[in-house]
Structure formats: C-alpha cells, structure tokens
Amino acid sequence: MPVLVITGTGTEVGKTITTAAVAAAALASGRTVAVLKAAQTGVRPDERGDADEVARLAGVATATELARYPEPLAPGTAARRAGLAPVRPHEIAVAAQKLATEHDLVLVEGAGGLLVRFDAEGGTLADAARLLEAPVLVVASAGLGTLNTTELTARELRTRGLDLLGVVIGSWPNTPDLASRCNVADLPEVSGAPLLGALPEGAGALAPADFRAAAPSWLAPWLDGTWDADGFGDREAPPSWDSRATGAVQEVPPSGAF
Image (cartoon, rainbow, N blue to C red; front, side, top):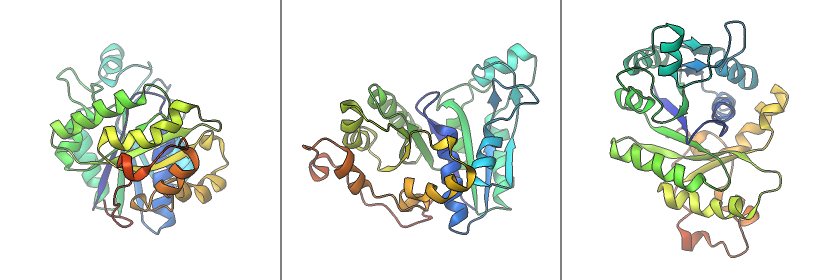
C-alpha cells in the first residue's frame, strides 16, 4: 500500500492545506486515506492541530499525530524544552506502515522543512521517508526566494537516494507578481521534477464541502486531480514563457502512480 511523504521548503508554505487537498482528491477518486502528522508543535492539548485541519477540510476519517509539543519550535527542540519524549524516524515509519495495511493511501506530513530535526540524534523526515521507501512531495511558496529553497530540498532528496515525486505551489496569489509568474517555469527546472499543482490563495478558508469539490482542480492527474500544468503556465506565466524551451513540460504518469 502506498505512502506519500509531504514536506515543505520551509514553514508557512501551505503544507497542511496541500495535504488536505491531496487527501480530498484521493477520496474523491474512491481511495481510502489516512493522514499521519509526525509531530505537532505550537498548539495546546485542547487546540486543533494540522491533522485535525486536514480531517475537517478533506473529510478524512483517520487523522493521527504521533506527538504534540506546546512551543512553536522544531520538534526536537520543542520536545526537549517540554521534557517530553521525541518522535524518532523509525516510529514515524512504523506508524505509517501500520496505517498502510488498512488504507489505500497514507499521507505523512512533516513539520517545517525536510531537515528539521525530530530528536537529539538529528533524525529527520528524510530519514523516515528512507525507511518507508516512500516518494516525497515538496510544497513550495510561489514568490521570490522559492527557487533557492526548492532546489536545495530537491538536491538533498536526491543525495539521499529519495524519490522526489514533484512540486506543488502551496498558495498561488490572487494577483501574482512577476517573480511568481516566472517561477511557474523555473520551479520544474530547478527541482528537476514536474509541477503537480497550485492551490489558490485562501483555499484553507473555504467551507469543507467547497474545498473537497475544488481540490481535484488544483492537482495534477498524478495526484488524482485534473489540473493542467501547460494550461496553468499559458495562463499565469509571463508572455515570453515557452514550456518547451524551459523543460517545464514533463510527462506525468497516470492517476494513482505513487
């Protein structure tokens, strides 16, 4: 049973909303889905976490977090300061594998970026992905600065022998600036992976029914959606954009390939 690991190029790039969209699209295609939040930081015991938000938006019945720490810090630091046990990569892998025996798809959402530390030994989400032998979906921001962080994340994944499934823009602005528009072509080039979707700004504020209905239109067929990278580029990229020249057009396997 497949597992997909979802990471971001940093914090606040739309990782949780993207996870919800992937879950909603998979559910709409008839697949059973579980969501696993490796470590939740920055929320009290009585507050809703990221897994809860994914469940609310996507309608996922199984949404689990392995640990929760009150301070908004890297999981390893937050665990140490709270005097609580850290989450280790092998625990993430074991939990995901168990969920995979009961679901068609398991989405493992990290905390922050790929190399954020979970424990004192330096364990990361990348280590969990390696143990799971799972592909990784990278969520990136749209604007200035995203090319550097996206390329660094892609390089690290390949250095570790991990499969980069593709890149999703976590929040596409209602009024994109020139940098964002140029990045439509540049993100696939610097990452060496296809652009697999773009979520509209404010998607997380939609009512759950509206979110679920729209989610497939934000994601490519590889993620059980209908989003067309070429059409998006023709509409949003600068007039000089040529998908054939930039290599932005990449063959995408059929739905459910991961």
